[in-house]
Amino acid sequence: MKVFVTGAAGFIGSNFTRYVLGLGRGYSIVSYDKLTYAGNLANLDSIADNSNYRFVKGDICDPASVEIAMSGCDGVVHFAAESHVDRSIYEPSACIETNVKGTFVLLQVARKLNISRFLHISTDEVYGDLQPGEFATENSSIRPSSPYSSSKAASDLLVLSFVRTYGFPALITRSSNNYGPYQFPEKFLPLMITNACDGKPLPIYGDGGQQRDWLHVDDNCRGILAVFEHGGVGEVYNIGGSDVIDNLTMARRVLRLMGKADGSLAFVKDRPGHDRRYALRCDKIETELGWRPSISLDEGLRQTIEWYKRRSDWLAGVRGGDYRTYYAKYYENRDASLRSIPERRFGSSS
Ligand code: NAD
Ligand code: TYD
Image (tube, rainbow, N blue to C red; front, side):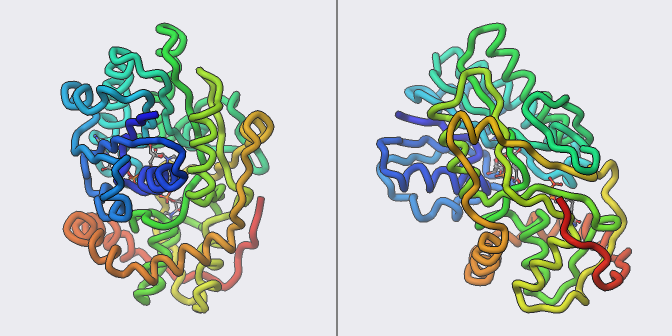
């Protein structure tokens, strides 16, 4: 099967592409990516010479370019997005353009080309802020809070409308927060790891009590392939980890695994509209497709920390121009509001 993978030069897309080609199950992949600040061909270095892989640089908002690149493919796995909540707050337009219009363009072209399977990659953030102890199922209401999550919710609804209106063979995964190798270091976990390596403060928004469900990217890639191969058309599948944990506890766990003291943790002014809790029930993918997360949080964190320490070459590459400008423009201001954190205020929670 020939699969058109959008956003394959980003974090999850590159892990997925390497994973699928590594299985040697007869897949070939056309990877399509605009190479925004978050896209990096170095993420795909190890498969650059694979004869079952081809890279095309292009924008998902450009129908003509998408059509040329997608021709001859049987399936689509759609990762491409503006994926960072903070950026969507500071500069929302790119997020709406790519996540909403780009998804619409892909659906139109895929329908025209009679694509037989279209998997849209979405997020648990579409369920919005959950109550303490609450978990979202696939039937929970959609209540996004940020420009990012509302653009993802809009794209999910477009996908489902194509299923209903045109009988288009699409399906959706909604995963929780991913972590692992090749994640751009503006996101929480790589930011904590790399700041700790550099002896910089670890900036925690608000009181650090916001809870996230953490999923190793390898577990997500397995889940995505299972849904792509065996999921029901028109269905949504949650994919979550087994740990729901607050940000402060998570940052402390990173420091502990790195053998560092808590002293570098610091509260900064909270993100506007910050969701307090995300947590997923994943019974559907577990019972229908036999998927379960297999990497424990401590094991996954240990591997991820080692990876960032080992790949200082990769880090130097992605921390060039755009990252530095972004950090200086938004995070340095924020870091100026640092307040030190009383020792051990939170325990882990679920
Ligand atoms: P990422 O930001 O690391 O990568 C996004 C990729 O999309 C980059 O390679 C970028 O160049 C490409 N891209 C952006 N705009 C494009 C455009 N207009 N045309 C073509 N390519 C474009 O993102 P990620 O973390 O790998 O997330 C991938 C997908 O998974 C996204 O749809 C995101 O919403 C979803 N998701 C991510 C997480 C997470 O924790 N990272 C969790 C749940 C869902
Ligand atoms: P992030 O990685 O941006 O993912 P998302 O907002 O999509 O969940 O952030 C994860 C959590 O970490 C979120 O609650 C915001 C918080 N956070 C911080 O406390 N400090 C930071 O510097 C960043 C980037 C995030």
